[in-house]
Image (tube, rainbow, N blue to C red; front, side):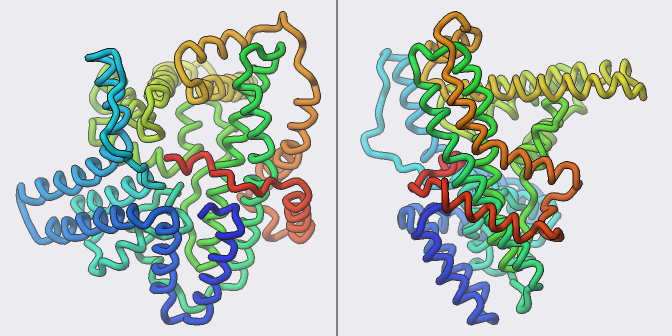
Length: 464
């Protein structure tokens, strides 16, 4: 049940009607709606999720009552259970393929179809953070199994985040009996802003990007154009989903975590990953990078830790060699940035001219190298990636039709103008307290109605 379908709209109307009609039973209503939402993909994968939650529910309670080495063994068992489910359903086919290629030069296949549960990467990390936080003494174990299920299956953010911490989200899931009117209004506006980005911007740019990236002999400049356009499409797609999720949740009185903060203003790759998919970066930092020793273990070991985190982060995104290589690529850029940054900062000092120059160069370099890395994800194999990279610099063939550019600007210019408004106002949602609130709503609705694409096209991050 995708957010951008009529089925979801009907589901949402029914869920909100019950939510408003039974204020004392709001937790139960949202739990039932969340189970129905996830079960609509496949009821079997709902059973897997409930089993995962049960293991962590009882494990966390045991961790809280035990002492000594027993606590750590239980934690290891819970985390192993979570990773075993994730590994089996997401990585078995990949492991069979590469094992077969290494031994008999032919890919091996599982004797049965292995269905990838929607959102398993997200909810696995979320429930893992819960049991680890109980072990660390940051939170107490949840007494109610049904509430922990709701924490894991909460439908606005279940399939593509944000990845929430139990200490932040669990208390909110009691649901307030009276929700401030401005919270509902602001949530509705945030939803519409998200739908505008997804249905009008991302889904209209997607066919153009897809068309160019599969051309065997693209016109001069076309591959470069698509490579620069894809990050903007991906940004509109992922932030569109996130804003819909945060808006729906806000309308129910719950504020989900901010997951993006103007990432294309980042002046280097370390800063970029603090602005893009913020909750995933925070998870990898707190539950993997720091436990490995972080940057406290010397330069060589610190670089190794970065590469481990990014290799696993790449595989978290997708069970292919391409995602693994992309993770290593990002790790190299982060490691190089960390090595060069102290020297660059010493050179610039407080000199405003140097700081401005470095910021400008840094933003361009960060965007270009991020865009280049995304081509790894779009290439089906290494030979095709080489062809795409060579096409980036090919300006000898027939020039690209400029209609591609004008068409993309129809969808990009409104997005850029609204983003510029957010930047200069220093507010995430400047329209909520502006005389332009109603004109903004009218514009979003009109553009969605006039040129939005309403076919059931998945959000890019749903595949994770």
